[in-house]
Image (cartoon, rainbow over all chains, first blue to last red; front, side, top):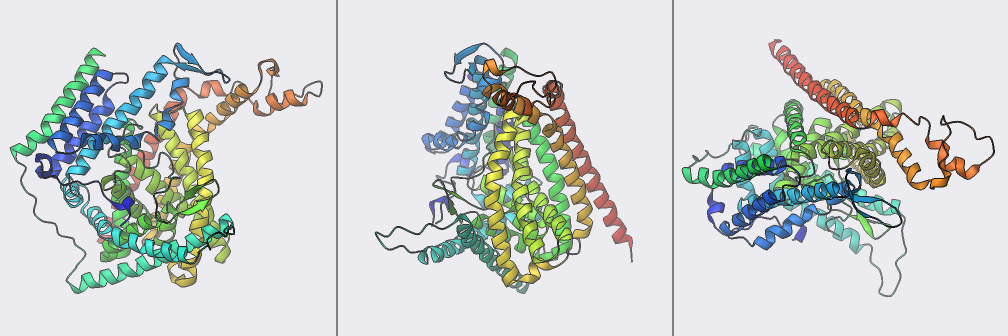
Length: 264
Length: 340
C-alpha cells in the first residue's frame, strides 16, 4: 500500500510499549503542556526536554534519529512565525539589504523558542504514537472520558480507512489509465476546470460508494445483533509501574519548567 | 496518483507549539461542547446508523483527500471536504466526520498536534462544516433549483476555507506567533486561492451525487436539523463577531504598512485627510499615498493591546454562546421527553 498510509507505530516490545496507554496519553499531554508553558528563551530547559525525549526513545528501543526526523514536520509551520524576527521590538542584529528590514535579537529568540518548543512537543507525541497501537490509543481515549460514540466513530474510520484508500486508489488508477499518453507525444494540456471536474466526480463516486457501503455494513451489524451500542473490553487496572513510567518524565519536566520560571 | 499533497493548507494540521497553551485549552473546551451537541443531534437523526455511517464517511473524506489533481505551477491540490460532508450529511454529522478525520490524522499519522487538536478541529471541522452548510442553505433559499444548489455549494466551499484561514490567523496572533496584520492577509490570501480548488471539487462531486442519488442532496432539512438551525445561526453570528473585531483593525494597518514599505521616502507627503485632492495632478504620488489613507489615525488606537483584548473578548463570547446553546439543547430535550 501507499507510503502515505503507513502509520507511525513501531513495535519493539519495550517497557514503553507495554505500559498502560491511559498513563502514556496523559503523560505526553502533560509534557506538551509543560513545554508550552515554559517561557520563551529558556534554552537550558529546552535542552533538558530534548534529553528527556531522547531518553524516552532509548527506553522505547526506538531510533532517536527517527524521533528527531519526525519533529522536522514542524519546520514548514515556522513560516507562520518567521515574521517575528522583524516585528518584535528590540536592538537590531542584522539589517537586511534592499528591504531595510531589521532583524531584532528578541525577535530571533522568540522565533527560535517557538520552533524548538514545537519540535520537542512533536517528539513527545512521536514517542506516544510509536509505542502505542492505535486501538490501544482509542481505548485509552474512551477511558479518559472522550465520548464513547466518538471513539466508536473513530474506530470505524480506522477500520475502513485502508479499504477506502484502496478504493480511491482504484478510482485514481482508472482515471490515469484513461488519460494515457503515447511516448514522445506531448500531452494536450487541459484546463484546470477539466481536471477539477474529473477529480471532483471521482470524489463524488467515492462518496456514494462509501455511503452504500455504510448501509451494507450497518445491515450486517444489525443481523449480528447490533443495537446501537458499541461494547469495549473491561479496563485493566493501572499498576504502580505504569504510574512510575508516566510520572517520572512528567515530574522531571515539571522540575525543568519550575527551574526556568524561577531562574528566568 | 495517490500522493501526499504538497499544497496542504498551512496551519490547518498545526503541530503543537504554534498556538499558546491557554488558547489550546479554550479550543478543547469549545470543541468538547460542540462535539457533545453534535453527538446528540446526529443520534436523533440517524439512530443506530450513527456509528457506521459517520465512521465510514470519515474514512471516505480521508481517502478523498488523497485524490490529487495537478494545478498550474507544478503542484497539486486536494479536497478538504468539510463543506461537502456538511452539505450531504448535515452540519452536525459533517462536524463529527471532520473531527474523526482530524483525530486520525493526528493520532495515527502524526499530522497535527495533540494539545492543539481542539483548535485544529475548530478550524478544519467546525468552521468548514458550519460555514459551508450555512452559506449553501442561504444561497439555496435565495435561488432554488439545481443552479442555486451548485452555486451555494461553490460559495460555501470557498468561504469555508477563507473563514478557516482567518480563524487560524487570529489564533496565531492571539498566541503571539504571528502578527495579525501579516498573518491575516497572508492566510486569507493563500486560502482564497486554495478555496477555488475546493469550490470546484465540491461542485463537481456534488453534481455527480446529484445525478446519481438526487434524493441525498435535494431533500429539505432532515428532521433534527431544524433545531440545529438556530444553533447554526448563533454560531455563525458569534464567529462573525470574533472575526469582525480583528478584521476592522488590521486591514487598515496592513494597508498602511504596505504603503509605507512601497512608498519611496521622498514621496511620503501625506495630505492631512485621506481623500484630500492634491492641488496639482501628481498621479504617481497620489497613487502611492492617498487611496490607502482613508483614516490616517484610525489604525494606531485599534491595534496593540486593545485589539488583542477585543479578540479575547470575542472568543470568550463564543464560549458563552456555546454554553447557552448547550443548555438550551438540554432543556428542549427534556421538554420533548416530558411529552406523552
